Amino acid sequence: MGGEVVAHDHLGLSGTPPERQEVRLSITVASLFVAVLIIVFPWRGAQLAEVHAFVPLVDCVMLFSELIIATLLYAQAAVFRSRALTLLASAYLFTGLLLVPHAMTFPGAFSPTGLLGAGASTTAWLAVFRRLTFPAAVICYALLKRREAGSWAIADRPKPPVYLWLAASIVLAGIGTCLTTVGHDRLPAMFANSRDTVQSSLILVNLATILLTCAAMLSLFRQQKSVLEIWLLVALTGWFLQSLLNITLQTRFTLGWYGLNAMTVAASLFVMVALIADTNRLYAKLALHLAARERERDDRLMSMGAVAAAMAHEIGQPLTASRLSTSAGLDWLKRDTPDREKAIESLQCAIDASDRTFAVIKSIRGTFTKESGSLVELNVNDLLRDTVALLTSDLTARKVSLQLELEPSVPIITANRVQLQRVLINLIVNAIESVSSVAKRPRRIDVRSAVHDCYIQIEIRDTGAGISADMIAQVFEPFITTKATGTGLGLSLSRSIVEEHGGRLWASSDQGDGATFYLQIPATFPAK
Image 1 (cartoon, rainbow, N blue to C red):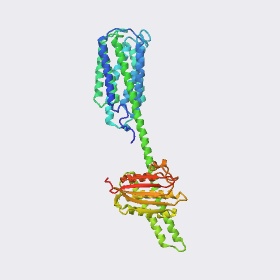
Image 2: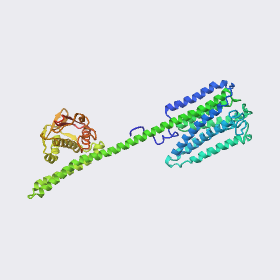
Image 3: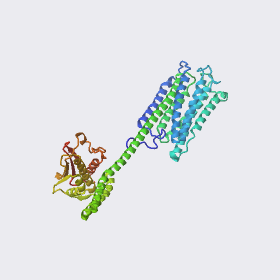
Image 4: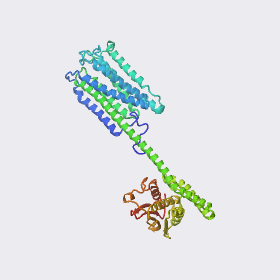
């Protein structure tokens, strides 16, 4: 098959193994996160200017990124009927929707105390829900994927209720928003005011996040990793490092606080860009694969057409000869004084032509499947005489004279008699048609055999119209013909047969002065 083959289980993000370059890139990104933590950590408590628009801007970028990721995963889940991908997509949708109330309730962003009747810890609890949901969803994804891999083929899986999961994510995001705003007083305090943290609550929440993130990373390491899992590991690395940094912070608007938010954005964007790139790459491979399949289908149809045309071309000659011989036999019998001997001779020629038709049909398959067929020892001169005898009626009807000049000492060869005779018939019939198309010139064909080194060479020269210089190089190409009713396959098939016998077939021509075809066959047929 042409083109690059795409394995059935290597089409989705969760089923395609990462390439080496992608693994290196993911390791590089994770290393950058570690480098940022090392650089920022010593000065994490340094107080910087209060940029209240920073959090809405960060949340807007992450909302855009996580909604795109959710869309990609939902699309893959629907195609591959994966509950694991559906759950992961819903988790991304849920965490993305929480960014809207997170930005609205951040103190100082839209009002000094935040919107939605929020308290001092509303924004923090929304962030906690996000931090706990993502690693928990990854753990569930890993478990479900392992189950799906061992249970059903893709075609046998039930379709996941994507719309129900989508609706559930929206409802849960609304419940989380209500819990952190209307039910704010029922949750433990995370911030004493708009800036300073409650250290004990912060430590407990971050420890829980770190443990859950480590469990999620371990669940991905335990299974064969795909493109999606590689980038989920990168995202989890970012969440883990953020939690390590966050657990040591005591107030907002410090270098550490700005750093962990920037790391959050970077982790989300890297995953989004990577998944978009990998999705495009996978669909490009799929498109190339489908194009290759279409080309293969067209090639098969063309091959079938070539077989049909070849059969029409090759079978047409003996059938025509059979019909002419039968008609001649009837004419001899219908005369006032029937000539039984001539009629019997004509009918015997018809029987021979019919036998040759069946032999041609039997050898057609061998020509197209590159099979050697039945090999026999034969004398080229005898084969030439038999072939000319088969075409005697055609030569007589067209008033064409054929002269045989045969080298008496040609050695015996081993070849497929039927196929080699088909080549000779093609060449002589073409010569007959060529000389029949010219006037005021002797209609003559010369057939010679000779020995050149270890080859037997046959020359078939006619006094026909010849072949033009621009056609001589193309005359052996498939579907190229100089005849109005030709199929353009006779010479192509003839060259294929000769080359299968280890020989050569070529032509020369002086346009207007006939053409000569040369056929060389090795005296000893090569072993196959």
